[in-house]
Image (cartoon, rainbow, N blue to C red):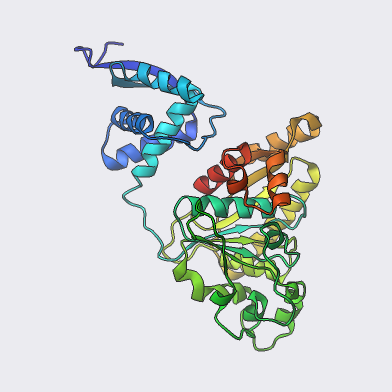
Length: 382
């Protein structure tokens, strides 16, 4: 093929890029009326001049990608990749992602309320708390004001962050959901003090009364529309936050109905902003639990005529050394396609160490693989 740049000011380069990222680049450049080659050039220039660390992009399944760059730029880019210890494919993916983040879709309508991420699965031990805490930290690190709600009466989230649960009988989220709140819910929020988050991360602690939440809601004659109880309780706080992350209990009861309802797509809200994130394991029992959860979600959507988005799955605690069951289960999760697998998180030590130390993962080990995975999930689920 003859070069469209006979003067030699640009050269054709070939690398690899994930298909989804390439498609997003194609659509976004068309929306802005910009040539793909110019967008890639801008992205690479920005990536080369910015100090890291840069979030890792999932490049699994990357396919051949060709474009035209200013003469000599690709050689300089490859040298920078080598110096930073990343592959050319990873460097290019980070560059393209950087350009996309700084050139949002001009047609996107932004919802005035906070994004609402419901981290749920009635199966215990899948890592709901780790994922909820991790993405909340990633959003706060990125400059967003984040409310992280410990909605599980077991209080693992509060405990892991060194925050005391609210004793029975005191003002709490449960009290407000049951129309028994006595004060402003803001008085219960705990701000996590760390320079990485800049006081943007606040936690609403768990309360022991949460074990009775389903029964309290079911028997309280003053409560109308039981599924709206969580939304009514949190609504006064929403103007203070950009993102609300809910760490759900392992149940399929009324409390879960309220969480699903809270995560529905509201009027004027774009698709894929709020919704459910489901941590799963690479094993058969996790698939069974997921089927039960989706049945509850689909029933509630049909009964209440809700629009609710599945933001994605997180395959957690993955270890290929567990053999065929693990590897084949992972492939089954990926083959679903919708919802997509947002990340595969290995069974690594940093998360357990952070819990033992009572520190957030992104503070304890900000550059570990698990921390980078949390950033990818947060970015993909927005």
